[in-house]
Every structure is written in C-alpha cells, then in structure tokens.
Length: 202
Length: 359
Image 1 (cartoon, rainbow over the protein chains, first blue to last red):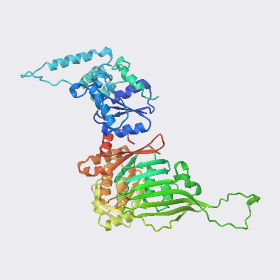
Image 2 (cartoon, chains in turn blue, cyan):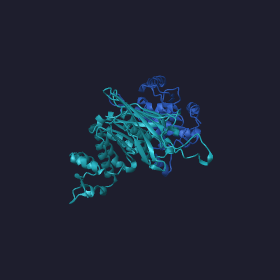
Image 3 (spheres, rainbow over the protein chains, first blue to last red):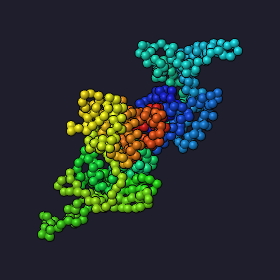
Image 4 (cartoon, each protein chain N blue to C red):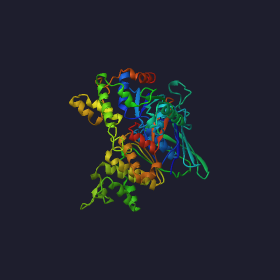
C-alpha cells in the first residue's frame, strides 16, 4: 500500500485526485493528515509500519516561501534531513509542482476552471485595494486577506444548488471532483500525476 | 510491577512477537484475528507458568471446552506441534521467566499378554499412549536465584474430552499472580472480592469510581440478595438496577483490586460500555493500577475507547500517569511475524487527534 502523508488541509484534494487518476481505492493507498511539516517525529511509527508491511511512503507537503521560512530547496533539504534522522523511508513531493516555491493554494490557483479564472483577478484587485489603504504613519492600515481566503472566495462565488450551498457552508467542501470548479486534467498537475503514477501500486 | 518485556514464539497465529517496552497499562489494538487476544493468553500463560491447567483454561475463554488429543495442536503456530511454544518474560533488571510447551506422550501403559493382534494383523504402532502437553519452566529471580521445573496436562480419559489431568510435581510456589477477565464475563461482580474490599475498608475507592458514572451513589454493600448501593433513597437498591456501565465498572474495579501487586488481563475492556462511560473506565484503570501496583493488559477495537484514553491522559491532573501507558498497534509483517508498534502518550494522542487509524 502507498501511504501518502499530506499536511492536512489538502487531504480531501489528494483523495479526490487519487480517485481521479486510479479509480477506486481498494486498499491501494491511504492519505494521512500529518498536521504540518514539523510533525514527522510524531508520525515515525506510521512510516515504519507501512515500510515493514512492504508498502511505500510518500510525503506531499508545501514547499512554502522564503518569507515564511521555506522555499522549495530549503524545505526539501529540511525534510530529507528529518527523514534521514528518523530513519524513515519516503519519497518527497513539494507543492505546487516539486520545483517552485509555493504551496497547496498555489496549485489550486493554477487548476481553477479557466471560465472562472477571472474571479482570481477580481480578488487580486481587492487585495491591491486593501493594501493601498495606509494609516497616518504611512503603514498598511488593514490586514491582507490570506491566500486561503482567495480560494474560498473563488469557490464561494460560483453559483450553487441549495444542496451544494449546504455542503459548502463553512468551507467544508471545495468540490474538488467538480469540473465546474477545478480542472484535474490541467497540465499544471502533470508533475504530481507523474510522481503518483510511478508510486501508487496497481 | 510485572513484565517489562515479553517474547512469544510459535503460539497460535503468532510465529514471533517481541514486546520490548511493556508498561503498567498496556492496550492492544489491531484488526480482527491479528492476535490481540492471543497476546493476552500468552502473557497469562507466562504469568502462571508452572500451572499447566492454564493451557486448557485459555481455550475455555473462547468457549472451547474440549481437551482431547487432537486439540493439543490448537495452541501451536500453524498447529505444528513439532515446534514448541516458547514464552519469555523479563520482570526486572535480572528477573526472567521462560516457558516451553511441547507435546508429550505418556510411555507407560498396561499390555495384556493374552491380547492377540486384532484380526490377525500386527501393527508396529500400538496407539494406546496418552498424549498431552508438557510444560518446562525456568526462572531467574531478581536476586540471581535460579530454578526450573516441569509439569504436564493430559485428557483424563480418552473417552471424555472435557476433563483434564494435571501433573505438577514441583514445589515451586509462584509469587506472581494474574487474573484474566474474558469479555463474556465482564459483568460478573465477584461478591467475595467486593466483601474483602469492604472488610479492608477500601470501599471508598470503589464508590468514588462508581460516582463518576452515577454521582448519587453514596455507599456500597454486600447483602444476601447481592451487591447493593445507596443512592439516597429510603433503602439500598441492587446494583443491577443501575445499568451495565456501573456493573461493568464495579466488576473491573473489584477484579483490579484483587490484582494488587499482580497482573490483570482484560479482553475487550470496553465491551458493553456506553462511550460516555469510557473516560471513567480509563481513569479507574490507570489510577487503580498505579495505587495497587498492578499491571494491566487489555484489548480493544473501539475507537471511542482510544479517544477516551487519550482524553483522560491529556488532563493535566493525569500527567503523571502518561509514562505508564502504552498502546500497541499489532501488525502482521510480510514475514508473518507479528510486530507491535508501541505508541507512547505523545504519539498516541497525536495519532488520535489527527484521526490516524492505528487499530
């Protein structure tokens, strides 16, 4: 079995994407919410158990940005060092595409339905507008919305049936399996697809 | 306290298992038929390693009351009696006990010279020998003293498979004792044990545990009609009237009290308990085990129970008990070896909080 460790907020996406690529699970994979890239020491037993059962471990975390202490090179190096230190066997993939800085939200921004991509531009205009307001000292007067808020706003803005609206309430459901929202065949996902295809056992 | 390490070889579905960091309270989880109950059974055999009757008793827990010759193989890995069952337990820095169980055929039998070969045929194999199990045990005590002995168990009569003959010629008197509670008997309150608790003026401890589920309980008594409690009414009422949760907790507390300085084995510890009572169960088990210097081995496959244990240990006032608890996730490896992944409090709590499946 392939055990895929994700940071947490991306768990549903990963499950949907795996089903999109490989069909029914049938015990071939398991997605585990690690709770963050610093939590590997608390999860060593899950890695070891799967390795010793003949399975493969994958770590799919955010590369993050230099500004928040990450970045593709730094984060990859950090995680490789932690895995070696804990004697854990795992292959790494860092969002968004295993080469650039970024995170899960970066990936989502790049796989939105092209028809609704304008919503992201609208949000960016709003961000610029918010950033333009300064206090008397010339410093930003307001907090900028988070990047998660951008994704939330994108999903929220697309018209929904009553049932879909109910599912979306509180941001619990992002409709990853609905092509009106997301393009799971986007070329932006090729690196992730290629990573998974060679590691999820049939 | 009890065992610090246990090793099991060739016992039922377990080719090999090493439990290397045994704590005061040990909870086993794993898929159905992975060997959870067998681990308890093996540890129980090792606890009473000079008592051959336990080989029969552990099968009775599974509602199997037969001990005929063909049943001898049941407790052997792959039912292959040519490879003995070997159990080893470390009890301290030096103290170790070992038990080897193998088939034995009683050689002596009466041969009547007047009996001729049946039907004029002569077979080289005359199958009247009585087959049973031999137990060879040895130990090293903490002070370095050593000892060994042997015992055996046979079906009493070839015609009957529900009576056994135990041969235990040794004079070894074991200081380690254990009590095994099968999930089937989880609601049976040992009245004698409860009477002893009351005689020893320790009923306050039991009442305190029961009050966690039913705060109205003021006292407990053993009457002719059975165990009764005072819930502030004009007369005592039978404990049976208070529901399964109270009865189960009382049964467990009473049994645990009996295990002072010993070991309690409980299969499916939370069987029959509503999830709201599970924190009370775990508080009682963890606190009593510590205060009675008892060791507990239990199994469960109830995720609510795991959440309850995690929640109880997360309480600040329970912080001192965290080091005493280990949850073992049993997994079968490709080599058919059974492996126990021991979750200490921090990892256990994290897995539960992240909803990671460890059962």
